[in-house]
Length: 380
Image (cartoon, rainbow, N blue to C red):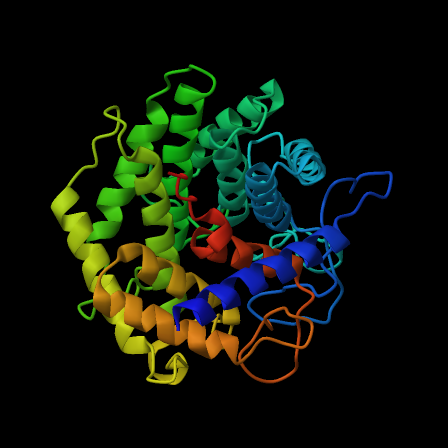
């Protein structure tokens, strides 16, 4: 079973990496270094066939995956490709410090239907995650990258509303208190603080304090059943419970062993994570299928992306019960892999694989468990 599990993960990592290398765009012009996604994502409609795009978050996740893999393999070509993608991403940052969420046909999102610019917390957070984690893993520390992270941190703080509340909305002018947006911000602000300190030797503390406000605010929003809802107004969701945990675990990994970070209300945060994992385990059927109809009211219903991120956080949380639930998810995933070697975007209906940013995210969720990332034992 262990061999089969590892083979499945390694095979998926290889197939997705090959796909991302095929769709990286080196056409001279404004998209040089980015990644073309043939199938576009337009939430909440989930219209995969309405025209592709070069997504900012796709470039961030793909570039990080290529950088991590290339570094491990000493593959200079792959590392070069990653750096080109990060350079493209840095050039696409808005003057205010954030990134647009690019939807179909290269159009920025307009969730509030105002027709005005609308920078995205989620898009900006994925950009910061990719760039920041790559810098912590050896990406050359260009000044353009530090400028990017500094401006992104200032933009995050600028959209906190009410000021000092720890509420960071999904996008500019959003009226909602959205848990995953706040936790994306928490992770981003911790990562920005760490990278500026460790790589660029700049001690800026306002970002760290903003992250702590977001943590403390969200602690009181967990449902009684352990679910971390999409919005503070309620609802039930597997997808966004997993996403909040993913952001939390990423932030904890960055803070680990660094005495400059002191996590507030440590016991309550651990309890929140434990109850959220218990909720996720209840959402995984005996055959590994997610109980969508009972536990998902968001537009993420039926997405395979959710299987991968839920497996990631359960494995990272540790413990026998979490591991068993993660193994069931992987068994279900194994049965859904397409003839191309890629996972489909949904667990039912039309077979769709050519969505680069989702494949890139999935690759990031898998990489920690790939045998390629397992340290080799020293020869004796």
